[in-house]
Image (cartoon, rainbow, N blue to C red; front, side, top):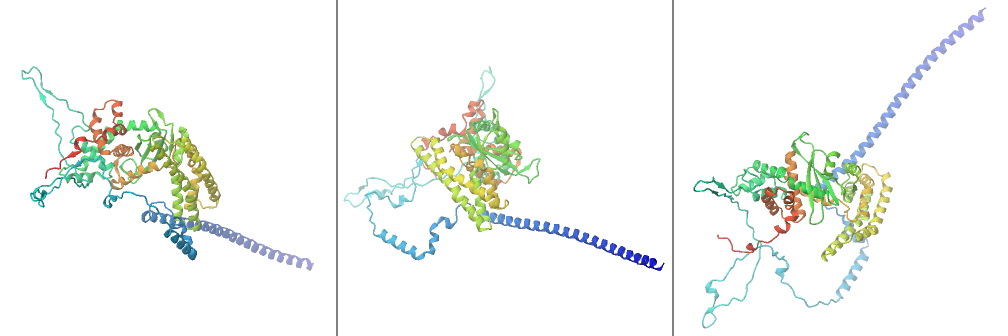
Length: 580
């Protein structure tokens, strides 16, 4: 009877021990699970910190590249030229100094022993060789510097007698007369019958550009040329007029300019717009503008869109104001009174232009210069020497030969034009297919090979990505010989606007921005067609108020007035000097 009791007690003790051990094991398992969970959280935090660290490193590299780019833009040269090693390929021969010196000595000795036959020729005077001839279209004012009467007598002969004039020496120099301000009095006589059979009759008042104002066409032309051609803000023009004792405040001048640009020249701008939409192709680009009074924030960007096109002699440059760079706003510039534009256009890589081209079924061309600029930036700012080398290879080995061919085509066009002929488009197409196409095909293969292994946010990665995305548009000019390969033409038109914007900074409201855009369109169209802006504006403001039909307004387009404005004034060819 005792053995079972002992066994029961032993079993109970053993169960108790096992229970305690089980609780201890469960506690240890719980602690291990918590530790495992904590380790997982630490691992996740470590991976997150590692990722953030990598992103910080990449951002640091990108910011350093941007800082170097900004410094290069501010302090460096603006020309996208190659470095010294590329400009002087013989620089690497400095390591072979003995061989190079021997070759130089041999070349000098051969040069010393060389004989040259010089044919007979007439040598110009050294004074004339450094001075260009003054063109004949400038009027001449003869100012004679003669000898005194006693100096024109011969005293060597037995009987003194006057000297005979056998010739003269002429020195020509440019003469400048500052502007003179006068007052035009437009007099309209009034007539009346002495028998009072009729009421008084006064000559009708001629139409003027700004009625009930003191602005004449010549003064308006001067103010508008000063701002939109020379880049002077209105308040500086006002200060300049005060020096001639003409007190016109900038508010008055600004009101005149906005009225002329926003109302009076609108029919002319509409005609230019219709002409541009009828062109075979056009360039388009945009630049930011600050407008003080608008629905957007004061610091928000508004935009001036510049379009350019037309054949030689009828070039059109149009500026338009848009509040936001949306697809709908840009699309309106492709639609005219006769419908949507049906030609071709060139732009940068803005995706909204792709949407417009797809919607309107237009042929869209890319800008190879934008591609080159991105590789130029990568060559300047990349940290790794390999990245700079690759960016330089893109510019020198692939893009440069394409532009060299375009320079050759330009020279051929000039040769044909000198003979009164036009270079056939078939010749341009053959040259591009033979020379440019193989180079660009190699360029595309080179880009596709490098793109997967290049960080996409680096300067080189952005250049490669841009090239890959824009490639169909970048090479489309190969099949269209009439199209240029970049958007540089309209970029040059924007440069004049951007230069002026540095002086006048902003527009007051949307109406003023559009008025300025209209006047910029007229001035830049004049410059594109080699028409002097002041002469054109003076004539335009004098005759535009009397133009009541489309034909009369069309006759006032710059290319229709060019020949008339270039006619020399025969009565001014020979003038007497003004009295002192």
